[in-house]
Image 1: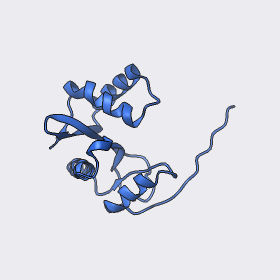
Image 2: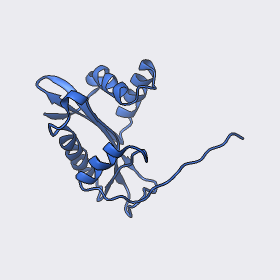
Image 3: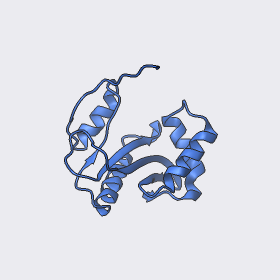
Image 4: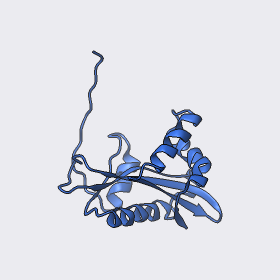
Length: 144
């Protein structure tokens, strides 16, 4: 089962998000997810196996330029995660479908995403769900 997350889900959502992004502190992640959730342009969906949340997806509206798109706003997958032991059961596809439907209801004609250049598992996932590779970039930064 997939359902939209509410503020009541924030503790479990934080646990799952920390499995995906373990470099973050618990309190910072909790605060950031709560802020994003109440911001109005993002949504989180949770995937349930029986009565336990086993995965999540975060999507939002992007109004800036998004690689490979020509409309605005664009629905954008910011993150998707399913616990290892619950993968290959269709949860990620269901989460993606929920995100795409949400984006349609928000007036989007396009949906986009990204992944790290070395993340072959994520690349395969995106291609399997019908995404087309739009570009590859290398980002740079330096201290001033």
